[in-house]
Length: 185
Image (cartoon, rainbow, N blue to C red; front, side, top):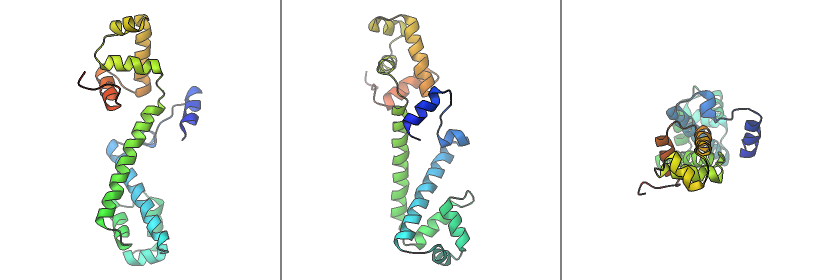
């Protein structure tokens, strides 16, 4: 979903999540699903580029055309092993499969980074977050920014809600990971 549409839905009171949260998947399960999707997309690309039908691929796998259709549809009962066997049958090398896995991993990292940018922290919230991450107290931040303590507490709550974080330690880790501050400070 495009970020703008997500923001409109949130403004109307809806909760916008990713498929992982919606389906209640663990991080490991989500990574496995993403890997399977990437491998299946590559399988379809190779099969279509080589003008191999599902029936022909089924013969190579000593399976049925309906099973190949289930592979390409991403059926939940299709194993990673079967997907890799199909890729090998089409001439894909282990190194190429490793490359696909690494691309899926990098895609996941980019998506996580984009999600954090799409959270739309205001410039003030980012500044407050940076100061918290640098070890400043609520009172110190309020004095530095010439606002009352309650305002900073409100910013902190808003930041924590947007980022789904629950402690200053988590805020600090997030700020370091996003490059708002470094551990050397």
